[in-house]
Length: 496
Image 1 (cartoon, rainbow, N blue to C red):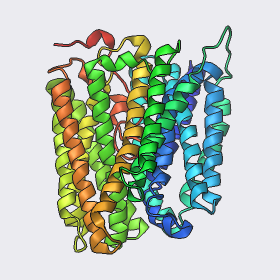
Image 2: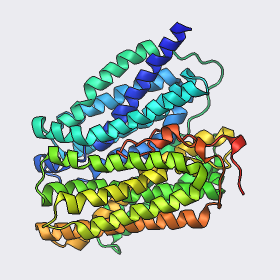
Image 3: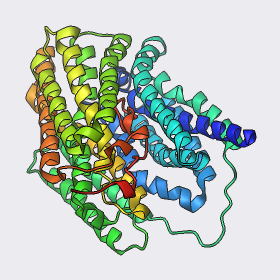
């Protein structure tokens, strides 16, 4: 018994390390973006791909990564994902060109897409259902919180003291330790019989389609909306996404059964996630640029200034954990979305060349982050309500993919909006562009709240089950990014 308990703790340590490093890498680069641009000579539209390359690869391949463990085994997937993630981190820290850094970030996203679902699975296998698993999932969520919060602060410290390259190279020793521990902790894969087929075509089509869509949005500064380049790129995106739908309808084991989106709660939950993180990703991006380019903060001060947002997210998630059973999913999503929208709107009104931390950053950060935190706990229930048990993993992968892809699309839109609104590169023009982007971010969160009000049923019982991993901040420093979503048990979930 003691041997089994010790082995389970070692497996948990590996899984928590994986979650921490994936979370760290989502947030650690934000503070280093201005230094990356100055050192490597990024163009005005290219810098956001340091963030988007990771998010798109992660989101587009996340469902495929979950299936990969079924094909080649959990140990092989974990070891391969760690090796790929570590190699990409090393390469990204040594590159000398913008394209090289973007490519390294994309490969990191591929590795993360394999790591997040398999590490979560390791916990559910090592710990039986009950209090032990609940505690393990709570620690899993705390690892995500620590990665997100530590990332923004450590990113500032590393950038200030050792340069931006260190924010990528810091992953290498962590990955090496995880690889050594994984060889001992995770048992070799033993498989028999035929292996299920992997839907590689579906994964490539959805990732290619979303990348083309983001590319078309980003380049509207250079190519007008009616230009052949923009229309051609948008057309290619639509063709690829339409082909994805066709493939998913025909393959025996699809990444996504399209009919799943016919369930109103699933549709509402994923639409909410898409809109919520469209606004939140952009908020982190523009807040980092505003504090460094307009307020003149150094990387350390910028990293520290992000901590109230992380704290507010934790506070909101803790409140939602206790209130979801009493208030219900729809009430929390609508209220949290509106509160987050108010915070983003406050950002848009408050930032300017004469602003300061207390009036332009602290207040809006706390309001927006508490609102975001209130939303994430019930999202797990909303996005999986009524889903059959065999498709629960698919629904979980879908909502996590919606988060990553929504962040990429939102960031592309907001960067375009900010650039058009600014009209120049002087501090006052840039601040005006950032303010407009925050206003649009608030509008996205308000639309998310409206979608929840219109599409979700009035009351979904069993909301208290959507805790644990879902209740903790995610890889970008906000709650809910644990690679899976803990859903209400099927027997306790019912519609009014």
